[in-house]
Length: 297
Image (cartoon, rainbow, N blue to C red; front, side, top):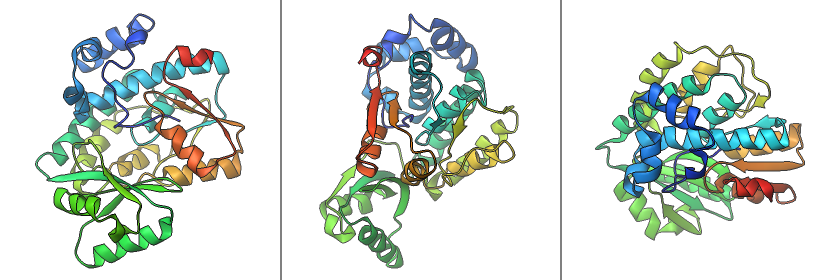
């Protein structure tokens, strides 16, 4: 499982620069014309939160930790990624190359950043012990003219909503309006996976049309429908992913039902996807690989 935007941390992946200079320094600069090494060593929190910086950075670091995991543990039965992380899963599965994934992610990040700039929108995590009631409350708010979208279905207790700053701010102080325990604003540039970013789809569609996808070496379940990747429509589904809800909880449940894996691994910065599995399938073994040391434990 590979994380998406929001998992970034200042200096993340510094230990990988010497281990993967071809990918993280040479290939990165050749493909994107900017230095990941500088981003790792010199950027502050504000800089790496920018969508056009955060997305290629998180992808490249997660990809290299993924290579280390595969080297030690072998290929996974199946992989998934949260939004941006879907590209990490597909690239490690060799459906497309590292370089091509970077090209798409760069265009995707720039287009998404452009779409949300000056939109006055943001996102928030909603924690609920009765998720069905929370979902009903959102529908009621929408019927009253409050534009709240569900951007992510993360696990059995959490969704992520997006909307105008003032609406999210109101719900933060009035979580009971959502039948929720807490509403936690997220440090993001705008309302991703909502109609606000629909204008970004054209640029993503255009770059995807020029990329070759090949049969992969392991299965990947996709965000838009929690179904297996298919070469016949992978580009269309990646384009739709931009403004569609991320069905991560459904992916977890589908994999548990169809594959019943003994162990789940979060691979990349932070540990967020591990928590999502823990809240959805509590009895499973869960590992976190976010450093070279973590591979030894």
